Length: 179
Image 1 (tube, helix red, strand yellow):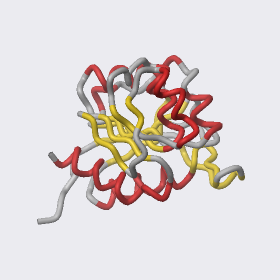
Image 2: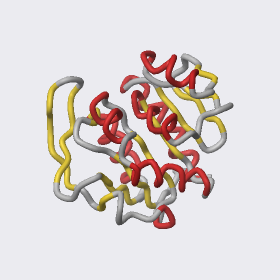
Image 3: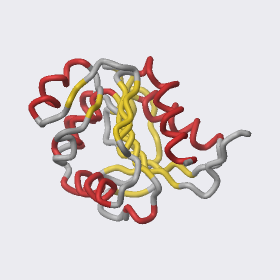
Image 4: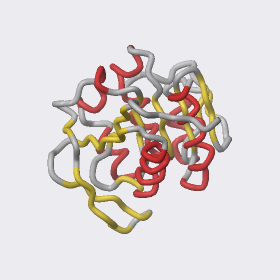
C-alpha cells in the first residue's frame, strides 16, 4: 500500500544560500504524496538556493519565521548549505520555531550543515545524529553522539550527511509523517 501524506503540512526553513537540492528533493517527495510543503524564511519575497558554492534558482517564500506558528505544521525540514546554516542559526525566530517543534514532539529533519541550528537551539545533547563531516566537532561539543551514516533517526530527529543521502533521508521523513 502506498503512503499518503494528504493533509500534512511541512515547513522548510531556509535563508539565502541553502543547498538547493536539499530543499527541492524533500519538497517534491512530500508533495508527490499529497503533503503541503511551505518555504519559510526570515524575509518575504524570494530566497536563493545554491548549488554548492554557486547561487542558483530563486524560490517564493510562503511565510516568514515571525508569522509562522508551529501548530500549523506536522514537521520541520532544515536544509543545509553553509551560508544558509550559518545565517539561520542566528535568527531568533527560526530557532524558536525549531524549539517549538521539539517541544510539540514533531519530526525535525535536518541534512548537511542544517544541524548547526539544532546546536544553537540546544536540542542535541544526548542525541545521536549525523551531518556533514565538518560539523562533527561542533555537534559533539554541543553534547551529541555524532555518527557517520547516511541517515540517523533518534526519536523525532532525522538527520543525514549530504545530498547523496537524500533518498534515505526522504524515506525516513515520509515514514515519520505517515506513522
